[in-house]
Length: 258
Image 1 (cartoon, rainbow, N blue to C red):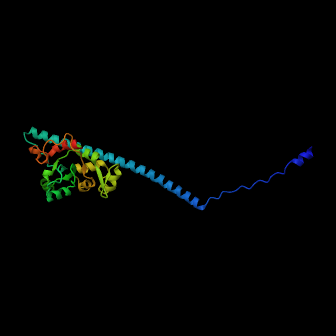
Image 2 (image 1 turned 180 degrees about the vertical axis):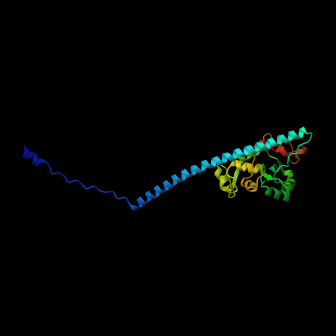
């Protein structure tokens, strides 16, 4: 029996050699490159996160400073008015330095000189609006195009709502939405303007970089006023019309057009 079992048993098989998988050198180089790229991206993300956190703190402090400045200015106005009233005199506020101009008429029967002035003011469409720094030259320009525009002195609320709701950036002659402060910082960072509150402050106070900031903003595209215009566009505002200077009454018109 034992002999038969040994005769029927097959001889043991030799172990097959283990094959080593050889990875091509190009794939190894690609893996190393990808690992380096991922590491660099992770490092850049951490640094960007830290930088954004520091920027947010700076922006928050600036916003607080601007609010204090606006409130102090408002309190000074109230104090001076009360002091003048107590002394039986009149308080005459300082002349406005900022105007908001809205085009209300089209191109029909438009003379060449008013047409050119409207182009310089960037008011090429009906219901287009823009901020203007008031001086002798700009006042003369506004007087020339008076029958075609409505303008006045905007307050802080109007300025802020216009910039936040209708504000677009002009980057490389293109109309770009201001979706992030990085758009502002890329264009105006060299002037110390890095956020929306900086833009509003520079416009409202007519700061040293007003020209650059105002040129950065695309002309505001407003809507027709709710309820329509109350009077004729060709008649001056003080005569019951809509054109010309309406001083602080421009805020009510912009609220209806914004």
